[in-house]
Image (tube, rainbow, N blue to C red):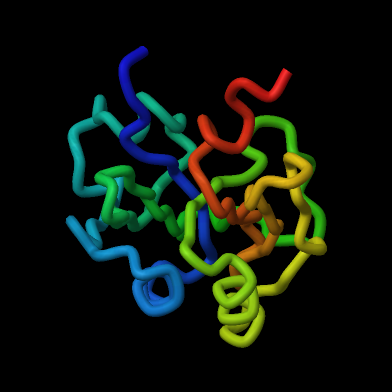
Length: 157
């Protein structure tokens, strides 16, 4: 494995999610929004090959962070993906972003419809390596780091 290019997230409202990720987290829209309607596609198509023939309609868009890693947002329209307070956390659990001021960004997330899920935690005593867990307005967990994963955990043991 050489790199992570993007992470896919399902959201109940693609347009609202694009706007939120652009305004609050400063991602930029790279491509889309695209629309998939199985009734307008060949019987054998990439979306149904990936997700199954029960998916009839969806929309998606690609957004990019400054470091070139992106997120792909999906709005499943038919059938609608269930939205609930609790996600089972089997599979996707969270994305992690690096920010210059994670406390300010956590406050911005909370003020814009998301929420702060944890306190500020120091991962290495006497080092400025901090993290906070938050949640976007669509129920996806976002972890914020003050430094890269390599700095946060490398050479610690």
